[in-house]
Image 1 (cartoon, rainbow, N blue to C red):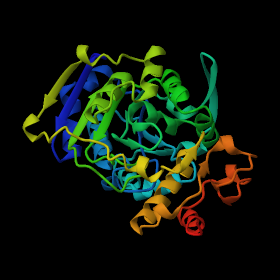
Image 2 (cartoon, helix red, strand yellow):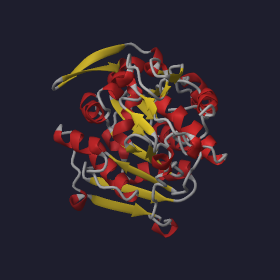
Image 3 (cartoon, rainbow, N blue to C red):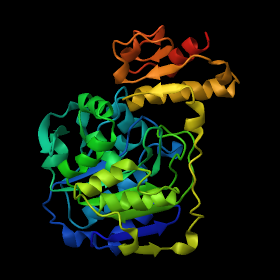
Image 4 (cartoon, rainbow, N blue to C red):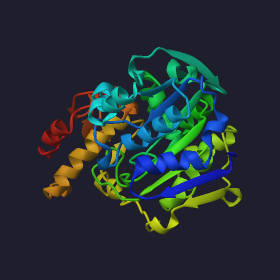
Length: 362
């Protein structure tokens, strides 16, 4: 399979679809049965895949079945949930403990892994060791929206392969540059995008959109450009795509891509448009270097208030992010970094419930 190829299969049985598409691309021809093969899903939060935030365990099961049926036995699953959530809980809630037992595949919580420094141009990136120690890494992101970067797919999914401290630093660096650089530090053998039912409103799930497709490719830049196009975005809209391309990670040239579709008669409309609801909810929010977990709690709180017609009653600005540390501001601060604000909600990250209580006072 060449880097300029994108393979898409449509349907509702994601395990069967995944197995079939791996057969069609003849993945085994690129593998040695003695290879250490790592599988990196997206388990950012402990929520079932049907909510649109996490990688379907059925897709991972299809991958494992294919690999084991072709003689590959050194397979592992690795992930690190976002700051504030528990990876082991995500493994259980998302159905990965069951798969691990069924196929005798170990689960690695990357929050417990040691890290090494990988220098990429002017950045020293702290990367977990496990993803770097495998011979072939299979990246399995979910195609979904993101409240800070508009979209998350292949490139951003690698963020689960860095320690929590580094995740916070990525936000302090503005996300765009370090995400683009990270794909240079962590080589991927294959990308399998879970396009079954991603949340096109918010990365934490709850608003899934049925898309019924699995997308396979090798080039994370090309895959993200294609994924962005499905959501009505250009590569310029998703800034880290251009950063990764400039780093030599891959090509965004969709015009030169060879796109092969299977079971196209099952294809749903490709008019999958993000709702932009997060933009509406956060009109009064001033965010600078905000971590995703903290921002996620805030969005949830604002959504609950909007459901009760209380959102418009908030008159003060809401500050969130690492850049506000030590600053005395006339407004409402969210999280530990904004403790000097006139009002603030403690926590790193704070809970949505605590944020609601504070915002209800205004």
